[in-house]
Length: 299
Image 1 (tube, one colour):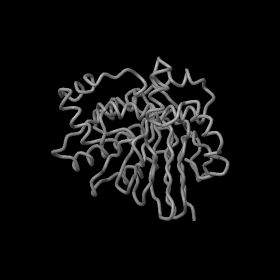
Image 2 (cartoon, rainbow, N blue to C red; image 1 turned 180 degrees about the vertical axis):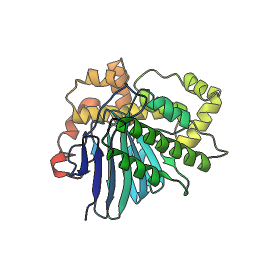
Image 3 (spheres, rainbow, N blue to C red; image 1 turned 90 degrees about the vertical axis):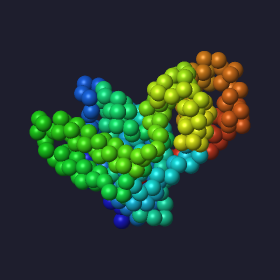
Image 4 (cartoon, rainbow, N blue to C red; image 1 turned 30 degrees about the vertical axis):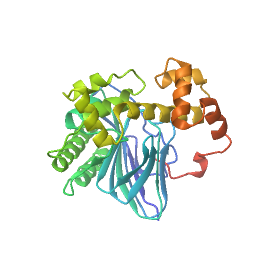
């Protein structure tokens, strides 16, 4: 049987969730704001997708099973004991089939989210945060879920405090698994957030207090590719989504992905993807790749 429990500030009950944007709100009136949360625990096939991305951040803590996602650098596997944080307006699709999947999710926004994540050393998707075996995240989520039931004037502030406890527990667990290793979370988070802007590699190296040569070396050892290739792959993945799921003119797609020169964008796209942007859009629309009406299990 399926088991999905969703928590919203305006609707605390079991729901069959068909809308991937329930509770999707971007706000800056407080440092941390919890929009909604959920618990998914099922032995059946589960798809978790949002082809356009939400307006808020999404934290997913996988307790049991695996989620598979296609990313610019290949398939990403999120296993039990992993946490990932998806930034706003980031398309995603996760699939789990043939095994039990059990994960907890919280969607959140606020004026200090990115600075908090950088302060705590929590990397953004497509990077995966591996946690130590001993952590108290399930307990923190239980407290968060209970917080939705307190329907009084303190609830929003209470949920914000409980969310920060989740972020701190995540950071503490990450730190205990990475002692002695070099992390580049600050610059990687920056790339994931601003990949469509001009990002000099020297600026990224400065964020991590490294020279460019050292930064490039450590980045490749962690991510498997150079920072330049990583940025290009993020841009191309974004371009593919826009070409596939929107009717934006290719000139606007190029600008949205960080390219002012259409010819350079088209040349880069063909070099990485193997076809021109026009050819990719035409071929992708020959098939209905994703029918949300036939995928009722969407978070």
